[in-house]
Image (cartoon, rainbow, N blue to C red; front, side, top):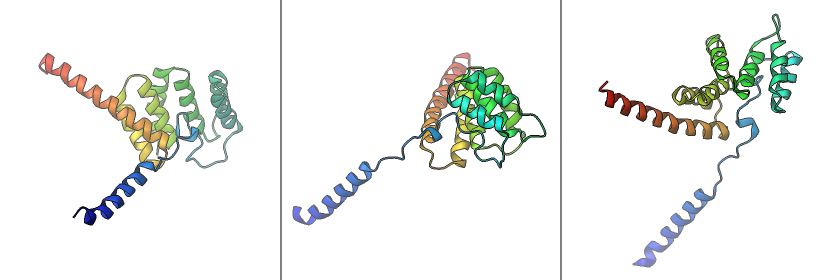
Length: 175
């Protein structure tokens, strides 16, 4: 009787072990904040955007801000605006970053880097629910980006905890 179940059981065990052994896609720098502000936008871009992006990656927030701020009309501004928001977040100028997000997010179709930058601004400001909503949109636009998916999952948990805490506080106040 046991012999009849052995082959399917071994097959099930083998399939289970293979599924567990399959590694998730690796998280790359391309999948973490900050993202290249040019991503998802049509070029060509002013040279200041590339220089600002390089400065931001090098950890030079002041240099990045100076480069991104130099881009003026009639040049395409969207990549510079996104880069400036990323710089503000990196430099912990969070109220300024959130204000800039409010202006840029409603100006048109947001790109993945814009959603991530604004999500990160909210997250670092302690606003997990809006951060999660923005990251969720970014993940929907850029499927398969493991770093974005991991951060969205972290923010989902924080947003849930934030809502539970607010609900408990409201219950204590009898709201």
